[in-house]
Length: 204
Image (cartoon, rainbow, N blue to C red; front, side):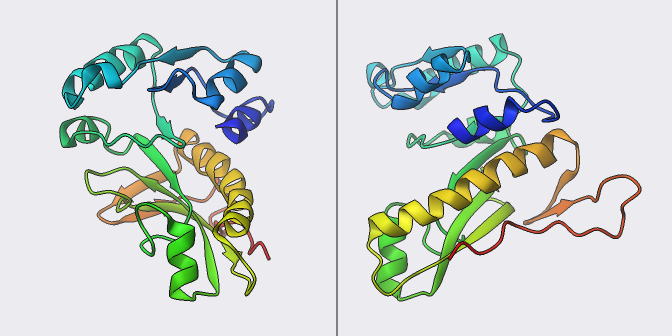
């Protein structure tokens, strides 16, 4: 979230962070957002119990009030109903700390270390009803070291998250992203048809 707010503050960035919404009043990101002059909204999910649809109705009202075009999830751990996800199809992004489709779900850094992989990273993907399974927009790789712990690997992956997410939002806001089935196509800038779009470099 902080990386997106920072990027949006740059003069040539084609999008703005209109509001930061949390389902927990004690979320640290709320104070960071307010310090940056970004409006915040708290919708406590506990009060809705297991009624996800009721929670989402209030959330949708807040999104409508702020005229939101794109939802960017960042550390939001509550699952949405399929109906809400379908309503925002192609307009909701998530960031996950692994190179999906490897290591979805919880503890992706621990999963990577237990599997013995040499490269992990971050993935920005569109949200679909299935968890961490949506079309991939951008990825950034991070080397896995022999002496890594879940915490040290997470810190290295975080660098890639901060690189990938603003770039992904920038491409979306420029209208250069299209979804074709399971694949995401990224159009080159006008007059630069030969240019390829690459993910951030490997962070060793």
